[in-house]
Length: 509
Image (tube, helix red, strand yellow):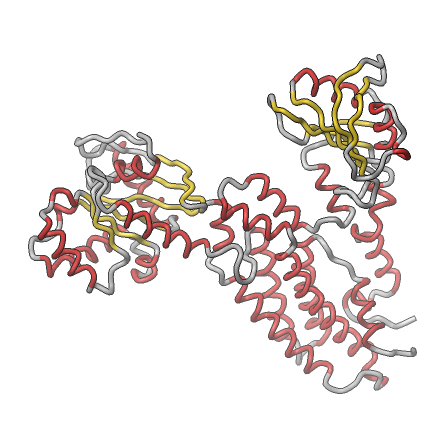
């Protein structure tokens, strides 16, 4: 046998076999699937409906089919709907008449034998079928997510696809649906799998160089190729991380905060966007004292919209707390809608840009670079109905020439004038923050992915740091990077490194 001397390979064949036994993607059938209970659950949601779907998965699925549908599964055509009487196996009472589908493993969602009953959606029918299933030996109700867990164990889905499936189930907007479908289709997993394959090749070459270079069995230049590949991969991962959190924003919703001084029209703007009276509107300054939140779907993009207390100095302890919370939300916001009363603008129109810039300095986070803060801001000048047409025209002319300001919308929440332009500007900002889920490289959608990719970059940096000092420690950096990627998809296996060694190097034939 080879004398493995570095990392997982230097620990010898016993370590590799232990790794194989511990790799869930290789031998889960014997422990987790073949000996598993048969599970069942209502998969179509609760409540009255026209059709309800009850799903069964596990080794006793054929018995369930023959017990409730009155025919053996061997006579049922796979993946073909059959209209059947559904019978209680204890009393032989007719429970319902519905469709039955038989999915023999491994060509099923879970990889196991599976059955679906499509029955009428009345509560009594559903309850009767579920009770009948629970009466069968070796059959039990499924735990939350257990069908998908079995699909993962069977290698039908990797973890990114599982997460995409969960996101698809919870998607509330078109953009969320598109992103979830793309992830469930495996785009993100394929990207990480490609990176893993390249790292496996790099690690195999380094391990082989350590073990066999003294015997002159390894060709010159192998490490130079590894250096180049690791550097390129590190740049790709870093670019992937520098996505502005677009996928995470799209998955969880863009945090949009309405902020400004008292009586600027913040609550009126919130009510217009929600098309209902979410917040109290009053001429009394300081009416809003806490954060009022609501979820919106803006042309398919999810937004968490927050109205905040008016910013001003006050002796009222409750209002002071509201102001503190308002500033805290502005600091955390992905986008700030800075609302200003148009009657507060200076009479000299040429001084409007300078005035607005000063106003934004007091409103936006002071510790952040103003230019970066302005990129996450949309300035709303409200109450344009209180200005003359001539004043509005002059202000718009001046603002069109002010390059240092963020996008500015002149509108009236009272009359609705300028609302369409504001909505287009808001949509443009939200699209920029979320990106197009169907174009370009797939985006990160989970904080978990980001954390593991950051560890991957750190591990690749370790390779470069120890490359000329200790090649074994450099190889450990590649191995840690590979492990970090594997934790994202749920696929980590040392035997893949051996496969590359045997394929790429003809050592001892």
